[in-house]
Every structure is written in C-alpha cells, then in structure tokens.
Image 1 (cartoon, one colour):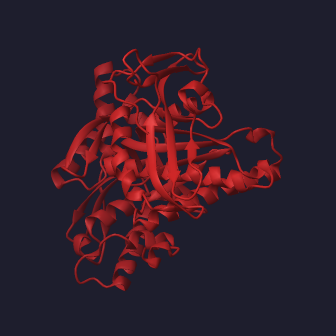
Image 2 (cartoon, one colour):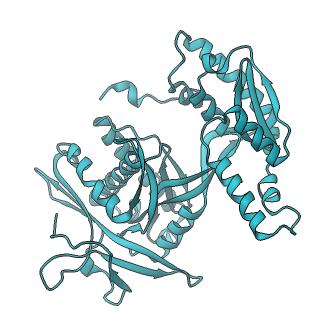
Image 3 (cartoon, helix red, strand yellow):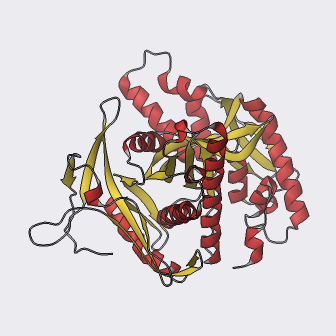
Length: 416
C-alpha cells in the first residue's frame, strides 16, 4: 500500500482529491476553491439560505438561492392545493434534491420558474470548467444545500448495555469502537480498497456510510462492517476488563435519506448528517437486535452498477450474494498476526426436508406497531494459524418463537 494514502488531510485537501483541469497548478486550484467557497458562504447566510441548483457561465455560476423553509412551503403551498398538485411539487423537489450535478441552462431556467426563484450570478475571475472542473464545483456547492440520496448503504453499530456504564467507561467503549473502525479501514487500505466513509455518533454507537454510491461502494461498506466487527471481537478477547471494549450489535440497510452538512462555528464542514427512511429503519432494527447479532434490512433498490454502467434493481439477497466474490480478494490479509484463509458471509435459515437451506425472513414490530422485515447475517473468518472468528448469531441461537418465513428465493445448498 502506498504510504501517502494514510496521510492526514485537511478539509481543503478533500476537495484537492478531485482531478484538476489540465494545465492548472495546485496553488491556482486552491485559490479558486477558496474564491468559490467564499461566494457561496456569503449567499448561504449562516444557514438561513440553501443552494438548490446551479449552472455554469463563461465567468461564473448562476445559482438558485432561497430560504431553507422553502423546502416545505413550496410543497404544501397555502394548504389548499389539491393532492395531485402537492404530489407534483413533491416529485419536482425530490428530483431537484437528488440531482448531484449541475443543471443545463434550459433545465435550470425551468426549475427557477417553477420555484419562482430569481437566479443569482456569482462572478468569478476564471471559467468554472477550466478553473475548477464541474465535479469539484458540485462537491463544494453540496456543503451549502440538502441532498436526497435514494440508494445509500448505512451501518449502525450499537454498544450493548451502554447506558449501564459509568461516563468514563462509556467514553472508553466509544474510543474502542472508533479504534476498530480505523483499524478496519487501514486493513482495507492495505488492499487498496479506499472507502470514502463518514460516521456520526448516536450516543452509544455510530452510523457509518460510504460517501460514494453504487453497487461497488455499498459492497465495500459491507466489507468494512465485517472487519470492524472482527477487530472488535479480537479486542474483546485481549481485553483485561470486559467493560473496556463494547459488545456490539450491528445493522446494515440500503435506502433513501436526506443529507445536510454540519456547521463548525460559522462554517459548514465536510461532515454531514443523514435523516430519512434508511436511518429510521436502522434505528427500529437495532431496538430488536440481540447482543452480538448482525441484521440486514429487507430492501430492493436501484443502484448503479459500475461493471456494465447500468442502473439495476438489487434486493437484500442478491446484495449479500454479490459481497462474496470480492471477499476472496481479501484472503491473505492478516488479523492479529494470522493470515485470513477465507471469509464466508451468508444469511441464515433452516434446512428443508430435502436437505437444502432456505433463508429466513424475520418480522419485527417496533414500538409503533409497524412491521420491519430483516434477515439474520453470519460472518465466519477462517485464519491460517489462528482460531476462526465467528461473527453474528446462528439460526438456532435466535428465539424459536421469532416470527419468520422462508424468503422468496430459490433454495441453495449450505455454504460456509
């Protein structure tokens, strides 16, 4: 692994990772980033306004800037709009917020007219495409807006019995979990799997997600989860005091959410919050998860497949199946000094009368009586000169009366 991958970086270096336009020096690129960022910061008005859309001009950008309250006021209007109009406005706004890039001029003008927002011109002393590049501008502008993401994979880790600990023990456990996250990330970097992940604390655990999107990005996040849990299990074995390392339960799900950026002092940072369906589902799942259990939510989501360049519908069962092949590239990686021979990950189920194994789909009712459907996941890591690491619970470890059905899929032979 190249050592420069592990160098610590400032918030500005995060933007410097984008490919620079041809012939542009690093110094000029930094200066241009600062110029655009300052202009957007002024329009942002300490968070009172949001950047809803932008389009490049020869020497600047046209942007749609409006108060953040417009998000709900535009959708609902004066409260007398028929349902069809509310639905139309909701879809328009969702489409706008889910757009990750610039709008072409005609589309930009149409959106401005629909929202009744007069565009503002940001004048720049350079051509945007040649002085920054459109992907970099999109990343900078995103810090001053809200985005809708439909296909985000997110992990939720929860420390079992956290509320029963003293404050000092709690902070030690959170630090231990953070250390496992860092160690797992470093392990994947050794195989040049560089996950651009983000995390935010829940108080007794973390939400973790990949800033990149698509099938490959979501699979890499699943790999990260496996190594975080493995490092945590090894840390628990080595600990002289059991309360110094958390016993974890983990949930993995793919779904939609809104993303907005945290502020530090008076400035938006590169750290974001997620709010939406995927985090709500994860919170409900973790409430019912057993200590040591790994749950995968039931999803069927459109994701971008980098292999064929197409958007494909992928459900939970197909997704876990897709994680198996990339795991073979991690064979030989060392965990606690022992090389990994094999990593087996699968969803558990029961054997049928023919000897084949199905996959159990569990129904979990939350405190509101709503039903959430999940799968129980297992991860087995076999090491050449060390004991195997078994993560998650077996089917027989789960309550026998747990509401379960056989998932709608073909039966497969027992593997792993």
